[in-house]
Image (cartoon, rainbow, N blue to C red):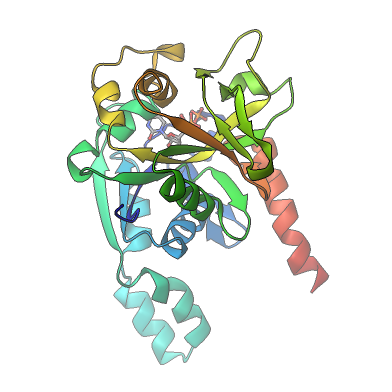
Length: 277
Ligand code: UTP
């Protein structure tokens, strides 16, 4: 089975929960102390063996492209000043051989529509999806864990998190009768986006996926779902009738940085290291 070498990072959302900060700055460029959210996700993908990062972006998110391009002026100035550590931070060795591709999503029709924009770049292979606003700190990283599970089982795998009852309605929620609890693995029977009542479990989809290229068949013909958006969850639900999909409950610190609470918690958590030193 070919390795997972491509990751899609959808970053075209409006980020309305962070207005006015996100009027001119993409949500994904908000810093967690000194590094933007999107760089955490790219770093995670690259360290897990991803060679091609495909951003689904919009015309207001140019700064993400700028962030991953070289800034020769700044490099020159840092070089002249002998600031070697700063140079390493803006021109990271681990990103050197990575291909960055940018595709525009014309209008924000939802996460499913964002992923569909990359169809022509994905062949007969498994590929990763990382939502940069979900920051997950663990070792091995969440996407590495999902890639390993998907290669072992030769199927699509979605990252899961346990979420409390009051918050679960904000997420995609799975139901599973077949559980390998010792391996944190759940074979999906169903999945539902933002269940209003009676969530099927307390296991929510959390920011990372490894999907088979088959998902595009279901995305292409999908009607808008909840909130009038083309939902990736709805396509996964359809795919379930034809292909197995696993859910994997990963360990680690998880922060939903698309919400103010999660963002503040992430900064507070990482700030401890700085304040303690
Ligand atoms: P969210 O719903 O969390 O992001 O989408 P949002 O829409 O930007 O945030 P709010 O709710 O308005 O505050 C999850 C991910 O999917 C991307 C977002 O950028 C985010 O990474 N997304 C969402 C797209 O790329 N396109 C879309 O049409 C919708």
